[in-house]
Length: 381
Image (cartoon, rainbow, N blue to C red; front, side, top):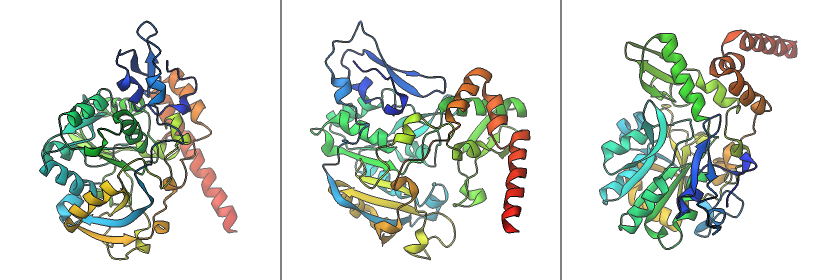
């Protein structure tokens, strides 16, 4: 029976709940909205499958991987696709091919009022909801079982997600069904808390006295590809978000993000995609317009076959792996020393308190800015 005594040892991928034939495990939220498995002892038969299927460890499956991945800078040749995608629209090219072959694509979208979940797409129109970054951990409840059903029905499935999600799905699916499963992971910085995002939306709507009808976690059309600013639209207006500030403090990440086993080049997927930071070392022209360019790491033979089938639709330039090693391909994000205090304050006082205390608004943030200003000027003297 699975029991989580250390939250940093569970990434919330749902593999354990999915594998349980007796439905003895359900995913339950903690105070921050992160899902953890809870076992019903009256249903558990002590088969041990839930513990065996867990891939959040250093022994995750890389049996199909090349010794090191093939690395590329890539950008869709259709600039409209680049314009509406987070980086160079490599995901669109890959998923288009799968859909055109009659397959299905899983990615991250919204339900309810911008709650972040994984969804299934059988058309390009449905798939388009997966475009863009969503800086919240997605809810995978029921998704792994749906993927298995699709594979058993003979469908090709492309699943995109964080590396802990793809590792969990790979372990759950098993080798017999792996042939038609294409795993695509992202270079992940860490996943923020779902309840913080929920409360932030509610806070903004209350302050504005209006409903939010559209969100963009990174609006490159307005601020450029390299910038990181959220924007939103109210029914009667719009503005800029500051959720970003809390994100980059690493103060509201899932505890397991600081212990990530996949923050290296041995990826638990066929293909890895990301923003290509440092693209200038590979080609000074491919992103001179600051519209965005994808880093693509091809990790397996299956990934190579898919990439070769679609690369004519992109501008593709081979890259040296050492020129692609952004921080989260080398090590996990370092958790803030204030992470535990932040959660305690959130549990006790609520969202508005932590937003003003830890966010980039209010007197505490202004005091930090003043201290930083004087510190910088003292160094210059």
